[in-house]
Image (tube, rainbow, N blue to C red):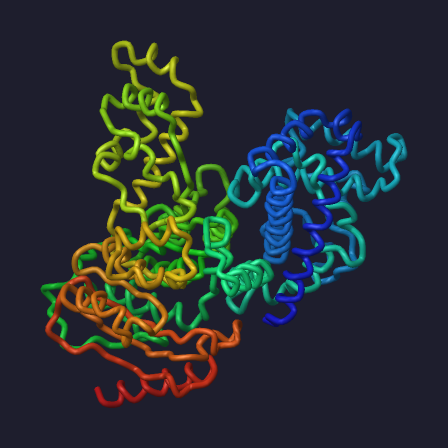
Length: 627
């Protein structure tokens, strides 16, 4: 996979799409624009979104950013699915998949009068699109670009179709799509054409022929790179990070070999400890054989469903995607049906949390593509399971709404309790839900169906929107209050000097020993998210091991937990960002104090990712020989 090409493509796409969407918005907002008369509902939705985003130039800029990325997401998702033959007719690719000059197969088919029944059959809005498409193609409807307009209708129809299966990737943007679709998608140098060229079939399919979702993660990191540069430049001018800056400032795609090391020595370790007859560990290239463990102090894992895995800052889902692969092999070895395994993994095993809407969508997409790659009928009715990836979303209730909610749930919670997630886009999964909200979890999603005396009358006084917002609060509480068998994470890195006042105060108040850097606060939070005797795997800055400012963290960590393995990476572990920018260490920790010495592997002498991998593999071979 040529990441240099992906980087150029993502950066150019961001610029191109933002320019295209901005042009659409500016044209629509002109006095007496065509959009106001031809698409009044779309126009109203667009102006309302701009108002919600702050109005004026700020509102326009935020709206441009969001919709440009939505189209980038859609195009790369459809290209990935085309390349893997997950679509029927290819939606953005030609009938020759790797030919960037070919018309999209759906357009070629439409010109022949062929349409997929699943997309255009039956009744409803999509059936009304067909006459318009046919009129455009036969000249019955005037157009300056009949082929382009036809493809626009086709693309929107397929986005609506895939919304049923992938609502996180093909979200319902409403009527605004009518006026915000980028123009000239069929042009030679368009984002769509370049996606076909850069995202080759070989790169999308991967060596296993089951899909290579890693390409999606790289594209996301490269897409936000310009924004990250802007935020980092702001830090040098003493600007501080708030909700708008944190995602770009802290996203960092984890190298695949580090992901494998962390997952194999947490999820894999738990399975091997509980099932010593398993031979799977012999296939895990970065698995470190344990030494001197007390079998009585391990977390009991009876079945694969017990291996719950969480990434509390999951980004585009790299950790969870590899955990899917490892869990699939565990289910397979345990004798489960191949058709059932993908759904079981998504339902029972994998849990992701993220504050960045775009990254959360990509993580959910990656896991669904993993499932579809293993089971070709995954999208059939009754087969699909939606992934457990939750965007931690801010929610605020006014005093009168708090009164209504207390009446609905028969409680007397104060405003602060209901507004636990008021700043969720800043604090994310560092939030520790109060016991009061946790006590309501059995009622999540059920209270609206209450049949108790007077219940219906009471519910009629409460808006559906308010109930939905309350259910969102409880859903987030469910993710953040439970404990998992394993947590694997590459947490955000941000020193306290770059934190905004709100974030700095929150971290100081709730994670005093980790207040120096966000990654340290996440170390403490992640230990709360695992069960007793469970395992935590992380890659963080190495500073917590040496600096006096982290002394409290070290004492707390070592007093109650045990480091089982560590790969001290030093600088150069992230080739994609120049390596020297961060010095890191990767490690696994058990949430129980064991009087044994962990296994520590020093890799700081390696100057690049490749050299560190070679040193790590050499050390593993040496340890096996000693055994």
